[in-house]
Amino acid sequence: MTTFADGVFQHGGMPTGGGGGIPNTFGDYYFVDANVSGGGGDGKTKATAFKYAGKANSAIVTNNHDVVMFNANSAINTAETNTEMTLTKNRSHWVGLGGGSRYLGQRSRWTMGVTTGSAIAVVQNTGVGNTFTNLKFDSSDTLATSLYAFADGGEYTQLTNCEIVKSTDLDQTTAAMILCNGDSAYYKNCAFGSLVHILSVKRSIMLMNRTTISGKVARDVVIEDCIFLIKTSSTDASCIHGSGATDIERFMLLKNCQFINAVLGSANCDQMVEFDSAQTEGYVLATGCSEVGATAFSTTTGVFTADPVASATSVSAVQAS
Image 1 (cartoon, rainbow, N blue to C red):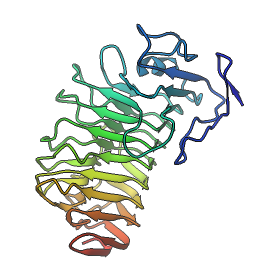
Image 2 (image 1 turned 135 degrees about the horizontal axis):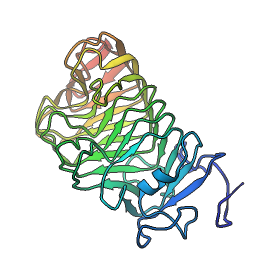
Image 3 (image 1 turned 90 degrees about the vertical axis):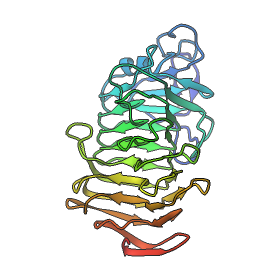
C-alpha cells in the first residue's frame, strides 16, 4: 500500500490493463491536471496538482524513480508557453490515468500546438530509464524544427500503451510521428501514426535516421505488439524509414506488429520498412508481423522476416523482399 500526501491509500503498481499501471516506487508521486486554475499547486496531491507537465519535470529528482500521474479527459500542455519538454533526468515514470489501457484514444493527452523557438517534439527524451504509460502524444506544431510528436534519444526508454500522432508537416520528408534514436528502447502495445492524416511525400511514421539527436542512434531496439498506421497518396511513404546505412546498430526486433495502410488513401506503400541503403551495422528482424496496403514488407538488405508476412499481394519470408 502506498500513502499519497493527501492521505489516500492506493495499491502501488495498480494494473490498468496491458501491463501498464502506477509503478511501485521508492520515489515521490506527483499529479498533473489541466483543469486546475492558474499554474496549479505543488503537485503533491490531487487538490494541489500541477497544471503543466513541465512543472513536474522541474520537481522530479533524477534517478529517484519519481512517478508523474496525468488526469484523464484533459489535454496537458508542457508549459504555459506551449513549448516542448526536454527530459534529461533519469529514471522517471509518466502515467496517464485513463481507467484502462488501449492502442488508440488514451484519455490523458499530452499536446503541443503551434510554438516558437526551437522545439522538435512534444517530448524530447534523452534520459536513462524513463517510462511513459497510457498517454497520447499529439502535436499539431508547424514550427520548422518541430517535426515529431515524440523524439527518443534516451537509453532504456519504455513506451507502453501510448499513441503517438503528428498531424502537421505531412508534406515534409524529414518529419515523422516518432523519432527513434534510442539505445535499448522498448515500445509495447503502442499505436504509431494515423489513418486520418494523409502523407503526400516520402515521409515515415517512425524515423530512424542516425544522430538526428546529436550522438544518438537506434541500438538494440525492441518493438512488440505495436500497430503502425499510415494513410498516403505517395508510394514512397513508409511506416519505418531510415536514410543511411548505419541507422540501425546491432539490431531492431519487430515482434508481433501490424502495419496498416488506409484503404481510403490513394496509394500503396512500396515498402512498410524501408532504408535507403543496405544496413551495415545491424539487422532488422521481424517475427509474427503482418501488413496490408504495401507492395512488399521490405526489400532492404538487412531487413529479415522470421516467418511469412501476409499482404494482399505477396508473401515475404527470410530475406525480406
